[in-house]
Length: 459
Figure 1: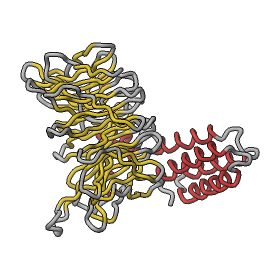
Figure 2: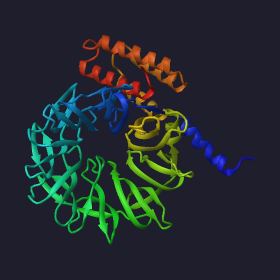
Figure 3: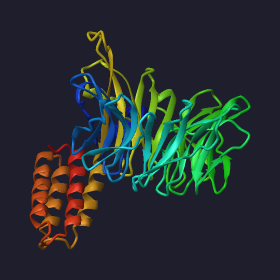
């Protein structure tokens, strides 16, 4: 008879076998940092080039592309929207750091001469929440929109930073004055202190949803507590039994994740929903933290294992899946130091980073690499969305048949044949572009195929 723990482990192992993890690669150098992922599975961040510079990148269709700079020696990508536009900051020829938007192969400078700036988050309309310096050296939250820039912080004696923006152009972030730090919401031309009289803050591009609800943390009786601000007031979201909570992300449905203390002293990732906080659990260790969650309530983050290692995880149907086990297969045995998942999209694709030990490299003995993890179910969902998109398009059912064949090959594990069918689909769409398929529709279909190619690893 199998031990109970072995019986319980079998479904988890089976679920892990349905997840594919790929290294994002580098721009020719030694390290990569992933920062954000969009719904199409495109990733941005920054990576070392062959000549030792650091450049922003976009990872799409299974390949990493260098975004270049604004004439200077480097750039960093921080956020990517649904349209594939990227923001961050890049160096100019004069050596100044300027906010940028990268779109359609071009990096546009959002900054001004003599002013240091950065783009931190971007919505589908291309509006950018960022920061810019003032002549006195203070950093202020700004909104880049419609070719203009709006200083969100009108107080002369404070500094501020923006963190997130939603589809309505509302921005959240933190400002600091002589009293402390304050979480804010910029909406309708006004900056609102979300917890007047308390020290508070928000962090990360996932701190606001499209309804304008904001999550963050505040000081209370010498400890930190999490809050959700919605409909004009902030609510303490509670704890897992002790006196500590930090909130990190909120979904469009208002679910929140982060880390909270339990009565036994352990700190665990949580999901807060409908006024109730639930323990996400750990990978058999005493610690876990959620950094991102999607609309299905999946949480991505990091957990301690029973051996004390720190592994990336994703939650699935009430179970934590140890992505760290899969990540370790990306590097030589025994070299992975730790891993963490930092983002997850609607279809369940996860991005993260892992650190590998290379003592022989005295200049950089520990290097960071990026990874993307995709489940078979996630890829299947992308296939099904594309199949639905081609219903009634093109000559007969030729396009739909090619996709059905590609999906069938993928499910049976024949990735090569699946990619071949997807390639045939792309060629047919291109041939019918402007004829039996409207140009804009053809572009969209090819973009969807590109997302699938990147997920399943087509060349």
